[in-house]
Amino acid sequence: MAKINTIGVLTSGGDAPGMNAAIRAVTRAAIYNGWKVKGIYRGWEGLINNEIKDFSSESVSGTINRGGTILRTARSKDFMNEEGRARAYENIKAHGIDALIVIGGNGSLAGAQVIASEYDLPCVGLPGTIDNDLYGTDTTIGYDTALNTIMECVDKIRDTANSHNRIFFVEVMGRDAGFLAQNAAIATGAEAAIIPEDRTDVDQLATFIGRGVRKSKNSSIVLVSESKKDGSGGAQYYADRLVHEYPEFEARVTILGHLQRGGSPTAKDRILASKMGATAIEALSEGQRNVMIGIKNGELVYVPFKKAIAHQQQMDLKDMLLKLKMNPDNHYTILPT
Image 1 (cartoon, helix red, strand yellow):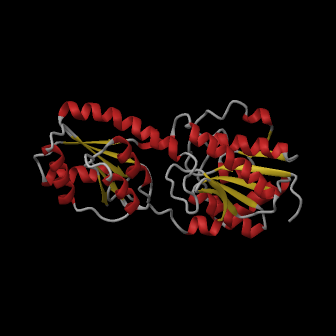
Image 2 (cartoon, rainbow, N blue to C red):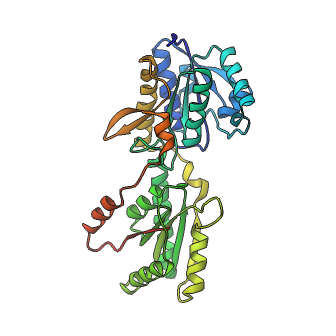
Image 3 (cartoon, one colour):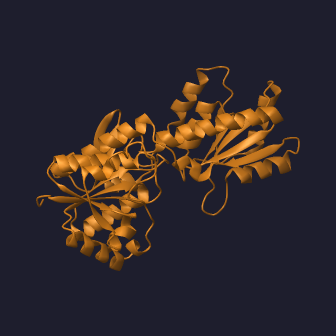
């Protein structure tokens, strides 16, 4: 592989708390390594439009505690075609960029894989998504912060739910993965979690909630993974069906939405992002390319792009249910969608 003198770093897709910590670590580790750093604004779209600036240690000073991404982010339709990627590569050459660090989720890493293969460009990815759905890593940058945000919100919802004897359906993000819904339900003592790994029988859900009410519960909270692209599922869908089929229940819906992406990252996300960012520079210096930095059993690992984006991280429901059974007073259950 050709010698690296300059790297580019970008964030793409949905923002996630901890991205700034990752940018900071990448920048400072690269400079320590004797490399120049180019900050690419607004992801692949910014690369196409030449929104590229020199980065120094001062550029990332005071950013580790900030949510969002200082490089901003955007989704790019132009990058999905060859002409758009050709323009992006022309800007890469014009700025003397020898390798890219891409921070984002599945789509972002898929983009990195494509441009890397088309132009023989060394790329390393960092898993930045609150969904925690990337294969090859136990957790992703932003997941822990989002989980804690959901927990804080549900704790507050519990206060009003108890005051009105209502069933609250709380919709959380997660796309096709139920990690946020499942683990937030456990952390908040919710009565159920509806996750996208299978299908839910509404009768089963209503029966369960009824059992909870009969056990002197003043309220019930159900965590629901967000609706699919076709509009099916989601908290409103299940609340409407429950009220229609079981009018004795009074239901309310709260959709947390983009609230889950904001806020200062937790210590866990700051540390994870910092370690992954420094390891990305180490990977490039070792001659690694087209890999995502993951963490498995506490160890940082290199995961080929084709594996990271071809598969989805799977939840171990058997292990989760075993943990729940250890507490006989816990009435929580996992209900697949």
